Image (cartoon, rainbow, N blue to C red; front, side, top):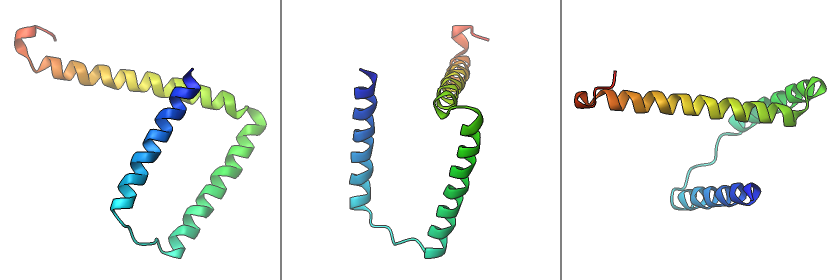
Amino acid sequence: MFDFLIGFIGNLLSWVVDLIFSVVHFPDPPPGLVASVNQMFDIIRSGLGFVDFFLPLSTIAAVLSAWFAVWSVLHAYHLLMWILRKFPFLGIE
């Protein structure tokens, strides 16, 4: 169920990004920038291989997902409370 929903949202976002980039034409990046980004991703991949030796990547993905969910809820709560405090007649402090 959730795999279908996540896949649908991913395809929808991909379609929107493709639509935006088909309207706006960006120039090709310089070759030096492309080489630097590729080197950075190679370093990240080798680091993930080292981490995967100690912890499975599925465990790390689950922990990072849970951490991001808690972080998002906490910040959404703080934002909501900040907005509600702007209305003095509500009496929220």
